[in-house]
Length: 160
View 1 (tube, rainbow, N blue to C red):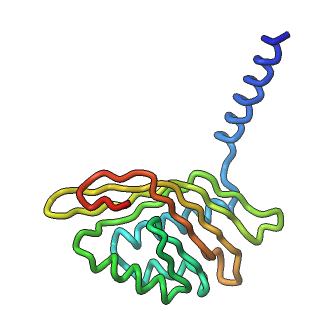
View 2 (tube, rainbow, N blue to C red):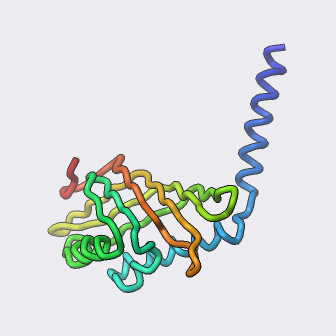
């Protein structure tokens, strides 16, 4: 009997994982993934003008060090500093899960992020997990908020 239960749980878990792995993104999930990829490209290019439009005017952003910014203007000021920093190379956010609300008006994105910097030829790489809150607006999907948690860091520019 114990083996049968173990087999049933294992079969269910395996089937669930296989179903999740085979499930294709909905059009909204694919749009959010594409917007995230555009945002990553804008950051790598240090292009503030291309980076900002994905954010709602009143977006809230919490960095991994606990600092925060509100609104596009706050984000613009902080990212302008990053883009001007000679040590800064890029941030990369990689969505793992994008889940839509029952009404389709909101979505949550969970994933991992990495930051790349260099100082005197020595690379620093750090990252962790993030969550983004998306909202459907008349002009398309926009980020209402993002929260980043640093879980690892390697290199000379590491801070707590």
